[in-house]
Image 1 (cartoon, rainbow, N blue to C red):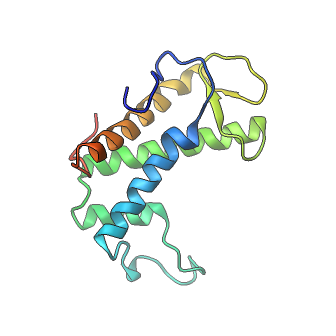
Image 2 (cartoon, rainbow, N blue to C red):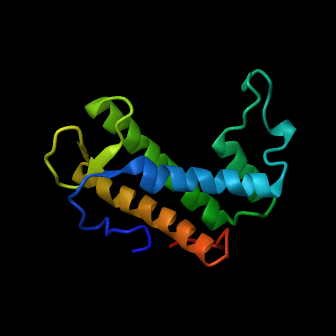
Image 3 (cartoon, one colour):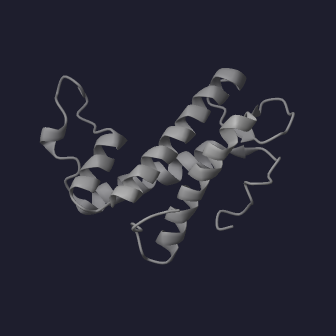
Length: 147
């Protein structure tokens, strides 16, 4: 596996922020910076964003509208970010703010054990992050799709 371990069988703790959330988030930011102008000023109001900082979802949809991201890729990135963010919130509520350590089937203090029904979603999000990393390495970003 590209990112260094096999998430499918991993019972060791790993940081969901480092392995899923940040790779997805940074890929969007990088493409928005390279594209220059995503999101467009008209895409957000002063009232909604008093600091004039666009949200990652606005950037994703702008990149899709500008044809930088395909529909498939847009859907996968949004799915991955949502899955990672949901698990981050659950982990921090369970083990403490700022702690993003998760695992599948471990029983360790300070680590959030992702419930079995949620694991497939996290594995799918991890595979999107891996797809993005692989496309960067091959110089083919953004990919048309991730499986």
